[in-house]
Each structure stands twice: as C-alpha cells, then as structure tokens.
Image (cartoon, rainbow, N blue to C red; front, side, top):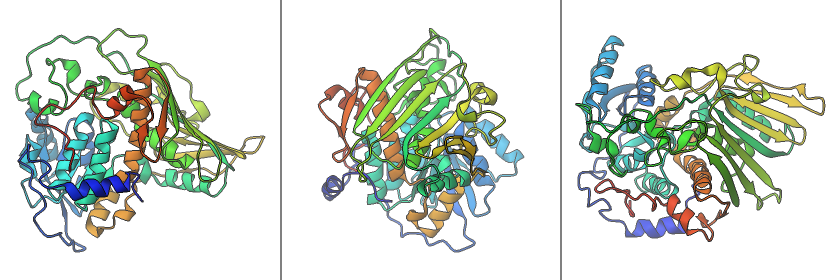
Length: 469
C-alpha cells in the first residue's frame, strides 16, 4: 500500500541523509547482505519489552516452528528474570538477554525485533531497528506524536525493511471479511463509522515519589521523555495515563478500533477534527482524559461524498451498543495485556465498531467477529466469527520479503495513529482543527502543530528521534 507520507518531502530528505544518528553513535547501519530464507529456516527474533504485551509476543512466537526467540530486552531486570523462568517452564530455549536495545542491535545474527515497550519509545526503537538492518514489529500506537511516526515510515522505506504495526484486527479473518462485505455493498453507501472504546478503568490514585526499585533502569525507561521523579504511576502500565509517556485509552485500546473504523469507512486523512473530553470522577495522577469524544470530517472524497468518523472513549458504567461486548454477539475483546486487572472485566467492556450505510448497519466486536442488520426492518444479515495472527503474518513476510502482503503495514499504521494524535491535540488545545490532507499539516494552529511535533514536550538527549533518518 502506498505511503501517505509526502513523497517529494521524503525524496528531498532522503537525498540529504548521511550519518543521521551520529549523536547516538551506537547504532550500526545495515552492512550485511540481505538474508535469503529457505523454507525450513527460522527467523531469529528479539522481543523488546516483556512486562505486558511483550509477553504476548513471546507466547505467539514460541508457537511458531519457523521462529527462534534469540534474545529478549527489558529495562527491568526483575521482569526479565521472571519471564526467563516462565520461558523455561514452557520449554523455550533460554535467549540472550539485554537491558539496552542498542547493545542488542549490534548482534548481526538477529533478523528482526518485536517492540512492546511504552508508547514514547516505539518510534525511536523502530528507527534504530531499521537502521541496524532488522525487520520490525512495532506495537500500537507506532508513535507518540504524528511527526515521529512519519520518520519511522521514512526509515522503513530507506532501509527497505519489513515493518508491521501491532493493530491486530487487520489480521482478523472475520474483520477482513466484514470490511470486504461493506466494500461489496452489503449495507449500501457507508457514510458513518463509530469506534467504541468503553473499558472499565478504575482510579490510579496518587503515588508518592520514592526511590527507583533495584534492577529497574529508570533512565533507559524514561528515554526520550522528560526525566521526572520516580513514582509507581510512572512505572508499569500506569504510564498509559500520563501525557509524557502515553496517549490515554484512545492510544491504548482505542487505536485498535480507530484503525478499523477508518479502514471500514474507506478513508485516510480528514479535513476537520473536533474533540471534547475530560478526566472525570477521580482525583488522581492521570493527566489524559478518561472520557473523550472525537469527530473526523471528510469533505473532499474522490466520489464527491462526505463521510464522518466518530470515536468515543468511556471509562466506567456503560451499555452495549449494537450488542458489542454482550454474550449475544460472540467473539471478544482484543486480548488483554497481562498485569492489568481493569482489562479483565470483559462483560463490562464494549470494544468495537459500528458502520452505518444506506441499506443497513454492520457491527464488529473487538478483533474476531462481525454481525449485520439489513433494511428498514433491521433483519439479521451475514455474520462471522474468526480470528487471525498478526505476528504470523509478519514472520511470513519477513521470510518472503513481500511487504505488500503485510496485513498491517506501517504506512497504514501511520495514518490511523495520525488520527489518534489529531484527536488528542484537538482535545488538548480545546478547539477544532482544520487539516490539510495533502500537506499533512494543521492549518493556522501553531499550538496544535507543536503537539503533533512533540514541541510541547521535546526529546531528552541522547534519546532524540532524528530529523534525518
């Protein structure tokens, strides 16, 4: 799929690049010839980040006969020790271990890295991986702001890497079928999609400043973000709810559904974005909203028609729209990361999408099922329940070198993550944004533009996303 990054800008930037990360100095550029995989060859992969979703990566790769988990990397030595013990019980051969990803990337025998670190690290680690000649699986959202996501795409293109985005629904067989059904006209002219992220989230409370736990490398964990005093709310999982390191539930669970909402509606970049939200009900350390409504307006579609994408984040008591999340629907939520009790309250969650057309509507539940209702009487229409495996699709493409067969290519991830950041930026500045979908820039709003470029936070040296990749 063709990237939405401005091609002329990319060519201009690429022509000027040399040793783009000289300031970091420890990333080796691709020097080995491209490996040609035979049918029985195993991909040597390194999993980066082991606490939550990274453990799901380990479990998935361990099931594949053509994959060897050659290395793992985590800045918390306690987590690494725990996971090594669990891997031993699963009869997974002991991998090499690292604390600093830059050391791991020096290993020329590693074919690919699979990134499941906090959001603020995703882009820089993906760029480093591409520069070191590794293929990359990077968790959602692939960037902490819109600009650095564009840099990842440039790096993937320049170094000719296979880069998969962790929006797992793209590999769900039923979701793929549902999108195709809509393309074939099942519900008529689809004019509105509605993404839902209603997930039970309790308060994170207020955590006092305390000494950094032994074995936890806080400087490496902080990386590109501003260095702040250590608290338990700037630590495992709760980093999601702080702007310096996370993007709220919109960028946590929500990006899965936002990606499907955009995919099913058949749109890319919008013309206007309006968001309103707040952090309600709790008095705690969270800085991101737990209630958020965002609308994206598309008024220059090739067919001359207008389309609207709505997205809503809700954190507490809710109903099940279009049966999503209820036992009547079937299927389930995107699998929860371990260690987060709030994600395990399945019956209280409503995670999915609804698409409205001129002949009916279609709903998708999480990542593995869809149902449809047709006509004025809303008669039940086609439905299906079947999952898929985004990691297996990545490995297949690493071996074949056919990037066009990626289900969740990084170029598509960039577009969906850009919508995420545009929505959060509109909320943070408190006004609607006008956007140029060709130049990929906000029109006449310097404050929002700074947020999308991370100018409101900046990068902490030496962990700086490079201007030239």
